[in-house]
Length: 464
Image 1: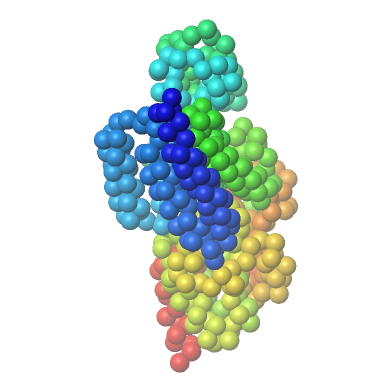
Image 2: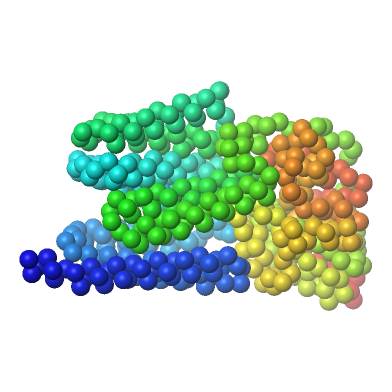
Protein backbone atom coordinates (compact mmCIF):
# COMPACT_ATOMS: atom_id res chain seq x y z
CA UNK A 1 0.00 0.00 0.00
CA UNK A 2 2.76 2.44 0.96
CA UNK A 3 4.62 1.66 -2.29
CA UNK A 4 1.45 2.41 -4.25
CA UNK A 5 0.96 5.79 -2.56
CA UNK A 6 4.64 6.64 -2.89
CA UNK A 7 4.16 6.80 -6.65
CA UNK A 8 1.72 9.70 -6.46
CA UNK A 9 4.32 12.48 -5.94
CA UNK A 10 6.32 11.12 -8.90
CA UNK A 11 3.26 10.82 -11.14
CA UNK A 12 2.10 14.28 -10.06
CA UNK A 13 5.46 15.74 -11.03
CA UNK A 14 5.43 13.91 -14.38
CA UNK A 15 1.92 15.05 -15.28
CA UNK A 16 2.71 18.64 -14.20
CA UNK A 17 5.78 18.53 -16.43
CA UNK A 18 3.70 17.14 -19.32
CA UNK A 19 1.20 19.97 -18.85
CA UNK A 20 3.97 22.58 -18.93
CA UNK A 21 5.43 20.93 -22.04
CA UNK A 22 2.04 21.01 -23.75
CA UNK A 23 1.72 24.74 -23.01
CA UNK A 24 5.18 25.38 -24.50
CA UNK A 25 4.21 23.30 -27.56
CA UNK A 26 1.20 25.53 -28.14
CA UNK A 27 3.22 28.72 -27.62
CA UNK A 28 5.90 27.41 -29.95
CA UNK A 29 3.35 26.57 -32.62
CA UNK A 30 1.86 30.05 -32.28
CA UNK A 31 5.32 31.57 -32.71
CA UNK A 32 5.85 29.52 -35.88
CA UNK A 33 2.95 31.33 -37.55
CA UNK A 34 5.17 34.35 -38.27
CA UNK A 35 8.55 34.38 -40.06
CA UNK A 36 9.79 36.86 -37.46
CA UNK A 37 9.27 34.46 -34.54
CA UNK A 38 9.32 31.08 -36.30
CA UNK A 39 12.87 30.14 -35.27
CA UNK A 40 12.09 31.00 -31.67
CA UNK A 41 9.00 28.77 -31.78
CA UNK A 42 10.98 25.83 -33.15
CA UNK A 43 13.59 26.21 -30.39
CA UNK A 44 10.90 26.37 -27.69
CA UNK A 45 9.18 23.26 -29.01
CA UNK A 46 12.53 21.46 -29.25
CA UNK A 47 13.42 22.16 -25.63
CA UNK A 48 9.92 21.12 -24.58
CA UNK A 49 10.32 17.81 -26.41
CA UNK A 50 13.64 17.20 -24.65
CA UNK A 51 12.00 17.92 -21.29
CA UNK A 52 9.12 15.53 -22.02
CA UNK A 53 11.54 12.77 -23.02
CA UNK A 54 13.70 13.19 -19.90
CA UNK A 55 10.70 13.28 -17.56
CA UNK A 56 9.36 10.05 -19.08
CA UNK A 57 12.40 8.18 -17.72
CA UNK A 58 10.99 8.78 -14.21
CA UNK A 59 7.72 6.94 -14.97
CA UNK A 60 7.12 4.26 -12.31
CA UNK A 61 7.89 0.75 -13.58
CA UNK A 62 9.80 2.00 -16.64
CA UNK A 63 12.30 -0.56 -17.95
CA UNK A 64 14.75 -1.06 -20.84
CA UNK A 65 16.58 2.20 -20.15
CA UNK A 66 19.58 1.00 -22.15
CA UNK A 67 17.53 0.40 -25.28
CA UNK A 68 15.77 3.73 -24.84
CA UNK A 69 19.03 5.64 -24.54
CA UNK A 70 20.48 3.75 -27.53
CA UNK A 71 17.43 4.57 -29.69
CA UNK A 72 17.56 8.23 -28.69
CA UNK A 73 21.29 8.39 -29.41
CA UNK A 74 20.92 6.82 -32.86
CA UNK A 75 17.99 9.07 -33.76
CA UNK A 76 19.84 12.17 -32.53
CA UNK A 77 22.96 11.41 -34.56
CA UNK A 78 20.97 10.67 -37.73
CA UNK A 79 18.85 13.81 -37.33
CA UNK A 80 21.85 16.02 -36.53
CA UNK A 81 23.93 14.82 -39.47
CA UNK A 82 21.06 14.91 -41.97
CA UNK A 83 19.87 18.30 -40.71
CA UNK A 84 23.35 19.77 -41.17
CA UNK A 85 23.97 18.24 -44.59
CA UNK A 86 20.60 18.60 -46.30
CA UNK A 87 20.41 21.40 -48.86
CA UNK A 88 17.64 23.98 -48.55
CA UNK A 89 16.20 22.73 -51.84
CA UNK A 90 15.91 19.25 -50.31
CA UNK A 91 14.10 20.49 -47.21
CA UNK A 92 10.61 19.49 -48.46
CA UNK A 93 11.54 15.83 -48.84
CA UNK A 94 13.26 15.86 -45.44
CA UNK A 95 10.10 17.28 -43.88
CA UNK A 96 8.09 14.58 -45.66
CA UNK A 97 10.26 11.72 -44.40
CA UNK A 98 10.47 13.10 -40.84
CA UNK A 99 6.71 13.47 -40.83
CA UNK A 100 6.42 9.89 -42.03
CA UNK A 101 8.61 8.74 -39.15
CA UNK A 102 6.12 10.27 -36.72
CA UNK A 103 3.25 8.38 -38.32
CA UNK A 104 5.31 5.19 -38.38
CA UNK A 105 6.11 5.60 -34.67
CA UNK A 106 2.41 5.95 -33.84
CA UNK A 107 1.63 2.82 -35.87
CA UNK A 108 4.50 0.97 -34.15
CA UNK A 109 3.08 1.85 -30.72
CA UNK A 110 -0.23 0.27 -31.71
CA UNK A 111 1.58 -2.76 -33.14
CA UNK A 112 3.37 -3.30 -29.81
CA UNK A 113 0.08 -3.06 -27.92
CA UNK A 114 -1.49 -5.60 -30.28
CA UNK A 115 1.57 -7.86 -30.00
CA UNK A 116 1.04 -8.11 -26.25
CA UNK A 117 -2.23 -9.84 -26.98
CA UNK A 118 -4.07 -8.04 -24.18
CA UNK A 119 -7.57 -6.67 -24.70
CA UNK A 120 -8.08 -3.22 -23.17
CA UNK A 121 -11.75 -2.71 -23.92
CA UNK A 122 -13.53 -1.63 -27.07
CA UNK A 123 -12.76 2.10 -26.74
CA UNK A 124 -9.01 1.72 -26.20
CA UNK A 125 -8.75 -0.95 -28.91
CA UNK A 126 -10.67 1.32 -31.29
CA UNK A 127 -8.32 4.24 -30.58
CA UNK A 128 -5.28 2.02 -31.05
CA UNK A 129 -6.67 0.76 -34.35
CA UNK A 130 -7.45 4.27 -35.59
CA UNK A 131 -3.96 5.43 -34.62
CA UNK A 132 -2.44 2.42 -36.38
CA UNK A 133 -4.48 3.03 -39.56
CA UNK A 134 -3.76 6.76 -39.78
CA UNK A 135 -0.12 6.36 -38.77
CA UNK A 136 0.56 3.58 -41.28
CA UNK A 137 -1.09 5.53 -44.11
CA UNK A 138 0.90 8.63 -43.18
CA UNK A 139 4.14 6.64 -43.01
CA UNK A 140 3.91 4.91 -46.39
CA UNK A 141 2.37 7.95 -48.08
CA UNK A 142 5.14 10.19 -46.76
CA UNK A 143 7.79 7.75 -48.00
CA UNK A 144 6.26 7.95 -51.48
CA UNK A 145 6.14 11.75 -51.23
CA UNK A 146 9.83 11.76 -50.27
CA UNK A 147 10.68 9.48 -53.21
CA UNK A 148 8.83 11.76 -55.64
CA UNK A 149 10.45 14.94 -54.36
CA UNK A 150 13.88 13.30 -54.27
CA UNK A 151 13.49 12.14 -57.87
CA UNK A 152 13.73 8.47 -56.91
CA UNK A 153 10.22 7.82 -58.17
CA UNK A 154 8.31 9.07 -61.20
CA UNK A 155 6.41 12.22 -60.35
CA UNK A 156 2.98 10.68 -60.94
CA UNK A 157 1.91 7.10 -61.55
CA UNK A 158 -1.76 6.36 -61.90
CA UNK A 159 -3.17 2.84 -61.71
CA UNK A 160 -6.03 1.70 -63.95
CA UNK A 161 -9.32 2.48 -62.16
CA UNK A 162 -7.31 4.36 -59.54
CA UNK A 163 -10.27 5.70 -57.55
CA UNK A 164 -11.94 2.29 -57.44
CA UNK A 165 -8.72 0.74 -56.17
CA UNK A 166 -8.49 3.44 -53.49
CA UNK A 167 -12.03 2.82 -52.32
CA UNK A 168 -11.69 -0.98 -52.27
CA UNK A 169 -8.42 -0.80 -50.34
CA UNK A 170 -9.86 1.69 -47.87
CA UNK A 171 -12.98 -0.41 -47.24
CA UNK A 172 -10.93 -3.57 -46.84
CA UNK A 173 -8.55 -1.89 -44.39
CA UNK A 174 -11.37 -0.37 -42.34
CA UNK A 175 -13.13 -3.75 -42.36
CA UNK A 176 -10.07 -5.49 -40.93
CA UNK A 177 -9.73 -2.73 -38.35
CA UNK A 178 -13.35 -3.20 -37.29
CA UNK A 179 -12.76 -6.95 -37.01
CA UNK A 180 -9.81 -6.28 -34.66
CA UNK A 181 -11.97 -4.04 -32.47
CA UNK A 182 -14.88 -6.49 -32.09
CA UNK A 183 -12.81 -9.70 -31.93
CA UNK A 184 -12.86 -11.47 -28.54
CA UNK A 185 -9.07 -11.74 -28.64
CA UNK A 186 -6.17 -10.37 -30.66
CA UNK A 187 -5.53 -12.39 -33.83
CA UNK A 188 -1.91 -11.86 -35.04
CA UNK A 189 -2.81 -12.83 -38.63
CA UNK A 190 -5.66 -10.33 -38.68
CA UNK A 191 -3.44 -7.58 -37.26
CA UNK A 192 -0.69 -8.35 -39.77
CA UNK A 193 -3.09 -8.18 -42.72
CA UNK A 194 -4.50 -4.92 -41.37
CA UNK A 195 -1.07 -3.26 -41.24
CA UNK A 196 -0.10 -4.52 -44.69
CA UNK A 197 -3.27 -3.11 -46.26
CA UNK A 198 -2.90 0.19 -44.40
CA UNK A 199 0.65 0.62 -45.69
CA UNK A 200 -0.41 -0.26 -49.24
CA UNK A 201 -3.31 2.19 -48.99
CA UNK A 202 -0.97 5.06 -48.10
CA UNK A 203 1.26 4.22 -51.06
CA UNK A 204 -1.54 3.81 -53.59
CA UNK A 205 -3.24 7.07 -52.58
CA UNK A 206 0.00 9.05 -53.00
CA UNK A 207 1.31 7.46 -56.22
CA UNK A 208 -0.85 9.44 -58.70
CA UNK A 209 -0.29 12.80 -57.00
CA UNK A 210 2.09 15.09 -58.89
CA UNK A 211 4.48 17.77 -57.73
CA UNK A 212 1.99 20.64 -58.01
CA UNK A 213 -0.23 19.05 -55.36
CA UNK A 214 2.60 17.76 -53.16
CA UNK A 215 2.71 20.68 -50.67
CA UNK A 216 -0.93 20.04 -49.77
CA UNK A 217 -0.33 16.30 -49.46
CA UNK A 218 2.66 16.78 -47.15
CA UNK A 219 0.56 19.06 -44.96
CA UNK A 220 -2.28 16.52 -44.96
CA UNK A 221 0.03 13.70 -43.87
CA UNK A 222 1.36 15.98 -41.14
CA UNK A 223 -2.20 16.31 -39.86
CA UNK A 224 -2.58 12.52 -40.05
CA UNK A 225 0.56 12.02 -38.00
CA UNK A 226 -0.68 14.39 -35.31
CA UNK A 227 -4.01 12.60 -35.05
CA UNK A 228 -2.30 9.21 -34.91
CA UNK A 229 -0.01 10.37 -32.10
CA UNK A 230 -2.99 11.79 -30.22
CA UNK A 231 -4.91 8.51 -30.46
CA UNK A 232 -1.91 6.52 -29.24
CA UNK A 233 -1.52 9.00 -26.38
CA UNK A 234 -4.98 7.94 -25.22
CA UNK A 235 -4.01 4.29 -25.52
CA UNK A 236 -0.87 4.75 -23.42
CA UNK A 237 -2.43 7.25 -21.02
CA UNK A 238 0.18 9.95 -21.69
CA UNK A 239 -1.38 13.46 -21.67
CA UNK A 240 1.63 15.05 -23.39
CA UNK A 241 1.16 12.82 -26.45
CA UNK A 242 -2.56 13.49 -26.47
CA UNK A 243 -2.18 17.27 -26.39
CA UNK A 244 0.78 17.41 -28.76
CA UNK A 245 -0.94 15.09 -31.22
CA UNK A 246 -4.19 17.03 -31.15
CA UNK A 247 -2.41 20.39 -31.56
CA UNK A 248 -0.28 19.15 -34.47
CA UNK A 249 -3.27 17.42 -36.05
CA UNK A 250 -5.43 20.53 -35.78
CA UNK A 251 -2.67 22.81 -37.09
CA UNK A 252 -1.95 20.45 -39.99
CA UNK A 253 -5.64 20.24 -40.84
CA UNK A 254 -6.05 24.03 -40.86
CA UNK A 255 -2.91 24.47 -42.96
CA UNK A 256 -4.12 21.84 -45.43
CA UNK A 257 -7.47 23.60 -45.75
CA UNK A 258 -5.78 26.98 -46.27
CA UNK A 259 -3.51 25.58 -48.97
CA UNK A 260 -6.35 23.79 -50.70
CA UNK A 261 -8.27 27.06 -50.63
CA UNK A 262 -5.23 28.84 -52.10
CA UNK A 263 -5.39 26.38 -55.00
CA UNK A 264 -9.21 26.54 -55.10
CA UNK A 265 -9.29 22.74 -55.03
CA UNK A 266 -11.06 20.60 -52.43
CA UNK A 267 -9.00 17.96 -50.63
CA UNK A 268 -11.05 15.21 -52.27
CA UNK A 269 -10.16 16.63 -55.68
CA UNK A 270 -6.44 16.65 -54.86
CA UNK A 271 -6.54 13.02 -53.68
CA UNK A 272 -8.89 11.56 -56.26
CA UNK A 273 -8.43 13.83 -59.31
CA UNK A 274 -4.72 14.76 -59.23
CA UNK A 275 -3.65 17.69 -61.38
CA UNK A 276 -1.36 15.44 -63.38
CA UNK A 277 -4.34 13.37 -64.50
CA UNK A 278 -6.75 16.20 -65.22
CA UNK A 279 -5.57 17.14 -68.70
CA UNK A 280 -3.61 20.11 -69.94
CA UNK A 281 -6.29 22.62 -70.96
CA UNK A 282 -6.46 24.51 -74.22
CA UNK A 283 -3.48 24.86 -76.54
CA UNK A 284 -1.55 28.09 -76.01
CA UNK A 285 -1.11 30.29 -79.06
CA UNK A 286 1.83 32.55 -79.82
CA UNK A 287 5.53 32.21 -79.27
CA UNK A 288 7.98 32.72 -76.46
CA UNK A 289 10.11 35.84 -76.88
CA UNK A 290 13.64 35.83 -75.48
CA UNK A 291 15.43 38.69 -73.74
CA UNK A 292 19.12 39.10 -72.94
CA UNK A 293 20.57 39.86 -69.53
CA UNK A 294 21.57 43.41 -70.59
CA UNK A 295 18.06 44.33 -71.73
CA UNK A 296 16.54 42.73 -68.62
CA UNK A 297 18.93 44.73 -66.45
CA UNK A 298 18.06 47.98 -68.24
CA UNK A 299 14.34 47.30 -67.96
CA UNK A 300 14.60 46.92 -64.18
CA UNK A 301 17.34 49.52 -63.58
CA UNK A 302 15.18 52.29 -65.06
CA UNK A 303 11.86 51.08 -63.65
CA UNK A 304 9.97 52.73 -60.82
CA UNK A 305 8.63 49.52 -59.28
CA UNK A 306 9.68 45.87 -59.64
CA UNK A 307 7.82 42.94 -58.12
CA UNK A 308 9.86 39.75 -57.78
CA UNK A 309 8.03 36.40 -57.74
CA UNK A 310 10.32 33.58 -56.55
CA UNK A 311 9.60 29.93 -57.27
CA UNK A 312 11.22 26.53 -57.03
CA UNK A 313 13.64 27.42 -59.83
CA UNK A 314 15.25 29.98 -57.52
CA UNK A 315 15.53 27.34 -54.81
CA UNK A 316 17.11 24.74 -57.11
CA UNK A 317 19.72 27.25 -58.30
CA UNK A 318 20.35 28.56 -54.78
CA UNK A 319 19.96 32.04 -56.23
CA UNK A 320 18.26 33.76 -53.30
CA UNK A 321 21.48 35.56 -52.26
CA UNK A 322 22.04 36.81 -55.82
CA UNK A 323 18.43 37.97 -55.99
CA UNK A 324 18.85 39.98 -52.79
CA UNK A 325 22.14 41.44 -54.07
CA UNK A 326 20.34 42.55 -57.22
CA UNK A 327 17.50 43.97 -55.14
CA UNK A 328 19.87 46.09 -53.06
CA UNK A 329 21.51 47.45 -56.21
CA UNK A 330 18.16 48.36 -57.75
CA UNK A 331 17.05 50.08 -54.56
CA UNK A 332 20.28 52.09 -54.49
CA UNK A 333 19.31 53.28 -57.98
CA UNK A 334 15.92 54.43 -56.68
CA UNK A 335 13.81 51.46 -57.78
CA UNK A 336 11.11 50.19 -55.41
CA UNK A 337 11.45 46.39 -55.14
CA UNK A 338 9.13 44.02 -53.28
CA UNK A 339 8.57 40.26 -53.23
CA UNK A 340 5.29 38.43 -53.93
CA UNK A 341 4.78 34.95 -52.44
CA UNK A 342 2.03 32.55 -53.44
CA UNK A 343 0.79 30.24 -50.62
CA UNK A 344 1.82 27.10 -52.54
CA UNK A 345 5.04 28.39 -54.14
CA UNK A 346 7.87 25.88 -53.88
CA UNK A 347 7.53 22.34 -52.59
CA UNK A 348 6.17 22.97 -49.10
CA UNK A 349 4.40 25.73 -47.14
CA UNK A 350 6.69 28.68 -46.45
CA UNK A 351 9.48 27.37 -48.69
CA UNK A 352 10.10 30.71 -50.42
CA UNK A 353 9.81 32.68 -47.17
CA UNK A 354 12.55 30.56 -45.60
CA UNK A 355 14.87 31.01 -48.58
CA UNK A 356 14.39 34.78 -48.68
CA UNK A 357 14.88 35.07 -44.92
CA UNK A 358 18.09 33.04 -45.25
CA UNK A 359 19.34 35.59 -47.81
CA UNK A 360 18.55 38.48 -45.48
CA UNK A 361 15.46 39.88 -47.21
CA UNK A 362 13.54 42.01 -44.65
CA UNK A 363 10.13 40.64 -43.76
CA UNK A 364 8.45 43.94 -44.59
CA UNK A 365 9.42 43.50 -48.25
CA UNK A 366 7.65 40.14 -48.54
CA UNK A 367 3.92 40.15 -49.34
CA UNK A 368 1.43 37.36 -49.81
CA UNK A 369 -1.07 37.04 -52.65
CA UNK A 370 -3.90 39.06 -51.11
CA UNK A 371 -1.59 41.91 -50.13
CA UNK A 372 0.29 42.30 -53.41
CA UNK A 373 -2.11 41.36 -56.21
CA UNK A 374 -3.57 44.83 -56.52
CA UNK A 375 -0.12 46.32 -57.11
CA UNK A 376 0.83 44.46 -60.29
CA UNK A 377 -1.07 46.82 -62.57
CA UNK A 378 1.10 49.69 -61.29
CA UNK A 379 4.38 47.73 -61.55
CA UNK A 380 6.80 48.43 -64.38
CA UNK A 381 8.33 44.96 -64.20
CA UNK A 382 7.24 41.63 -62.72
CA UNK A 383 10.30 39.37 -62.43
CA UNK A 384 9.31 35.69 -62.25
CA UNK A 385 12.15 33.42 -61.09
CA UNK A 386 11.40 29.76 -61.63
CA UNK A 387 7.68 29.96 -60.81
CA UNK A 388 5.03 28.44 -63.09
CA UNK A 389 1.49 27.51 -62.09
CA UNK A 390 1.18 30.32 -59.51
CA UNK A 391 1.46 32.94 -62.29
CA UNK A 392 -0.42 31.11 -65.06
CA UNK A 393 -3.29 33.32 -66.33
CA UNK A 394 -5.05 30.19 -67.65
CA UNK A 395 -6.31 29.84 -64.09
CA UNK A 396 -8.52 32.86 -64.82
CA UNK A 397 -9.43 32.30 -68.48
CA UNK A 398 -9.29 28.61 -69.45
CA UNK A 399 -12.15 26.58 -67.98
CA UNK A 400 -10.63 23.36 -69.30
CA UNK A 401 -7.34 23.94 -67.47
CA UNK A 402 -6.64 21.78 -64.38
CA UNK A 403 -5.80 24.94 -62.44
CA UNK A 404 -8.86 26.94 -63.52
CA UNK A 405 -10.18 28.92 -60.57
CA UNK A 406 -6.92 28.76 -58.61
CA UNK A 407 -5.98 32.21 -57.25
CA UNK A 408 -2.76 33.33 -58.94
CA UNK A 409 -0.33 36.21 -58.67
CA UNK A 410 -1.37 38.72 -61.34
CA UNK A 411 2.08 39.01 -62.92
CA UNK A 412 0.59 39.32 -66.40
CA UNK A 413 -0.99 42.66 -65.44
CA UNK A 414 2.42 44.32 -64.99
CA UNK A 415 3.63 46.56 -67.81
CA UNK A 416 6.51 44.15 -68.50
CA UNK A 417 7.17 40.58 -67.38
CA UNK A 418 10.58 38.95 -67.28
CA UNK A 419 10.64 35.20 -66.67
CA UNK A 420 13.89 33.50 -65.64
CA UNK A 421 13.58 29.95 -66.95
CA UNK A 422 16.02 27.12 -67.58
CA UNK A 423 14.37 25.97 -70.82
CA UNK A 424 11.21 25.97 -72.91
CA UNK A 425 9.57 23.01 -71.18
CA UNK A 426 6.53 23.06 -68.90
CA UNK A 427 6.75 23.30 -65.13
CA UNK A 428 6.55 20.58 -62.52
CA UNK A 429 2.82 20.08 -63.02
CA UNK A 430 3.23 19.60 -66.78
CA UNK A 431 0.80 22.44 -67.63
CA UNK A 432 1.73 24.94 -70.32
CA UNK A 433 1.89 28.50 -68.99
CA UNK A 434 0.05 31.10 -71.08
CA UNK A 435 2.02 33.88 -69.40
CA UNK A 436 5.17 32.87 -71.27
CA UNK A 437 3.47 33.60 -74.63
CA UNK A 438 1.98 37.01 -73.82
CA UNK A 439 3.09 40.13 -75.72
CA UNK A 440 4.43 41.84 -72.58
CA UNK A 441 6.49 38.81 -71.48
CA UNK A 442 10.14 38.11 -72.24
CA UNK A 443 12.07 35.01 -71.20
CA UNK A 444 15.62 35.13 -69.82
CA UNK A 445 16.91 31.58 -70.30
CA UNK A 446 19.41 29.98 -67.93
CA UNK A 447 19.64 28.92 -64.32
CA UNK A 448 18.54 31.59 -61.86
CA UNK A 449 22.03 31.79 -60.37
CA UNK A 450 23.63 32.43 -63.75
CA UNK A 451 20.91 34.71 -65.15
CA UNK A 452 20.64 36.96 -62.11
CA UNK A 453 24.44 37.08 -61.85
CA UNK A 454 24.63 38.43 -65.41
CA UNK A 455 21.88 40.95 -64.69
CA UNK A 456 23.85 42.17 -61.66
CA UNK A 457 26.94 42.77 -63.77
CA UNK A 458 24.96 44.87 -66.25
CA UNK A 459 23.19 46.84 -63.49
CA UNK A 460 26.61 47.63 -62.01
CA UNK A 461 27.84 48.87 -65.37
CA UNK A 462 24.77 51.11 -65.77
CA UNK A 463 25.21 52.59 -62.31
CA UNK A 464 28.81 53.68 -62.85
